[in-house]
Amino acid sequence: MKSFRNPIVPGFHPDPSCILVDGTYYLVTSSFLYTPGVPIYTSQDLIHWTQIGNVITRPSQLSLSKCTIRQGTKNCGGVWAPTIRYHKDVFYVVATCVFPDKEFADHSRWENHVWSTKDPHSRDAWSDGIRFDFPGYDTSLFWDENNDDRVYIQGALYWRVKEGIAQFEIDLETGASLSGEPKPIWSGTGRPIPEAPHMYRKDEWYYLLVAEGGTELDHCATIARSRSVWGPFEECPNNPIIHAASKDAYFQTIGHADIFQSPDGQWFAVALATRDGRINFPMGRETVLIPGQWEPGSWPVFNARVESVMKTSADSLRPVPSTNENILGNFSRTEVDVIWPHNLLRLRNPDEDAYQYVDGSLHLWPSAKGDTLDGRFGTPTFVARRQTAIECTTEIEIIPAKDPSVIAGLSVYLDFESHIDLVLTRSGTGPGFEAHIRQRTLGTGSSDTASVPVDSGALRAVAHEDRYEFFGWRDGAWVSIGTGLAKDVSGGFTGVLIGPYAEGPASGNDDHAKTTVKKWVYFEAA
Image 1 (cartoon, rainbow, N blue to C red):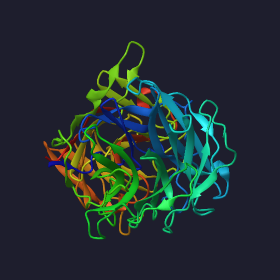
Image 2 (image 1 turned 180 degrees about the horizontal axis):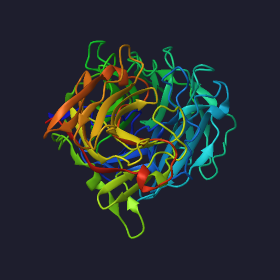
Image 3 (image 1 turned 135 degrees about the vertical axis):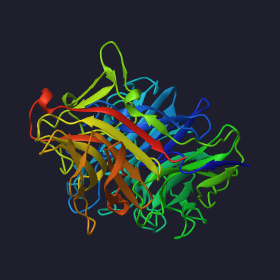
């Protein structure tokens, strides 16, 4: 038996969908409020994953400008639950853009799109989206090869209005329905919030996999089957087929799964999970791999306990090395523009004029509209990578703006009301600098720290299981600036990002307002 380590795609990577095409696995996950959207990964062995790009890379494909987090909740809008599929030499991704401020029964709360490409490895390869009407979210694609290759959309009706999974036949060229209004096909097992449907055809049966229980501790995956794509569907007697082993297990909230088969016949599921999922889980919902069996004419079985280290009969599974990344070294240039690393994220539709990469350094200017990390909307000047290990370190070195009204630093960011910032300013009393912690969290007892004199713009954030430690540089050594709690940046739909930011009054892109990032490295404990 071979062993592998979960999560296979660590950090903020929820709602995974995976397919196998010509010996390569392709996996996508949700991206919510961030650009570029819908990261796409490939692997030859299901363990070593490489991000080859993102589906949504330009505003013409989708605008996130009106997406936010619903006031008073952690209900985050933006791009939810992509499904990736392949048919006749074309890759397709379908997903829902959610506007959570809109009323629950307002169909415009949900904006569903499908994008396509023949070469997902190519830069900016994915088409502009074809929009289609569906009164809900978590939409998926299924081609019925037994019925003239007709293609169907399955999706979740919003549970606050009407629970259940609905379906319609779609014209992928136009997005039009070929079967009228979406028809309810299964309401689940009686657990709350049936969602995340995927349809499969196997052994003359149509199998419908869904998530139930809500994306918290009761999350799970259930399955039903029918002889017709339209139902009626009979429930598996062994539901749920994917779930946390117990409330004490390391991985919790397991659900929102997709099922596929390896070339050697082994069945797998990918699913989202959180590590513990109660107090400290700043990386949010991550992607785990679960081996299973699916005998002919029977039901799939995935009841193995999901562990950090799991075993499978599949071949060629190897250990995954820890990450050590020089982020500024991952930028590249063509004759006409700069190519950003695939894994760097910015909020909504960023102002490209606020960023400039030149000769190994990244220059940042405050948002021309005065947007900050505290805003429910807008595009603050902030660029970051996902935290992908419990124990990790991020170091940057910046040259602060000459304008004293501009502040910059390093943010541990979950959302607009849950972030911890290491702030660097020019000293008001001399030629040096000062650093302090700015707490923007809902945690009790969290507060800003006093400013500490430092010698340079070198800043460090060190993540531990229950806290973050922040440091500045003075007298040839790192000095403590303060700490923040991991529980204060845990929860919701996303996960922590860590990276540099710049804020201040709208001032244009002049040198006085420019913050320069000279160094940016991320490394994980071995």
